[in-house]
Length: 279
Ligand code: GLU
Image: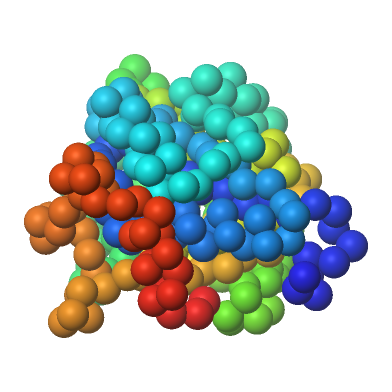
């Protein structure tokens, strides 16, 4: 048992796929890491279907995901579906509204992109705060954004712990006033994931390093909403022989394709386990 897991009761990890497509090897590796971390400590492994994006989520993907995980030999102790929990996310947003830490925003993606002065590398440009500075008339669809600077005044300095990076000082300001409720859904990824990790009692968040930056935001939400702070284990992503990240667009075979072709899922899981770079 790791030092951080001691004294915190039973270890709980989760795998939280978005059913916007079929799973790939990278998903399998992440699910195996989370599953094995919990099981090696006598803990629980929970599954969460992150389907708040109603336009891109599909039931057929959910069915395939569950089948793929069973095929890999991974059993989960609990299944939560985000679309069943919209009232919880709405209540979380109301609490932040009551604290005057969120504001409505009517800006379109195109407007935000046009106002970005400099290229921002991989990260989307931070929202320039237009609707914070000039409150809009709310007769058109609007999202809700966290006033990040104000939120940090409330929380003060925050840290979180990552298995590889150690103690990390939360630095969410570069991401700006992130969206907490979308124009088309009563939550965003950030709000839902933070509330769900707490509700599911997750003690150790095992996920890809591509979500490392998101943790800065989640830490702020945990502090504002009085939620427990899990430990984080951001792991390297599965890459191809050229070091490129495996993604749907590269045409890598899905887990489903491998399963339907008759491949042995437990065998694949074992090979992945022995090839996983340590986190
Ligand atoms: N639903 C996210 C994804 O499929 C993962 C969220 C998380 O692990 O925090 O990329």
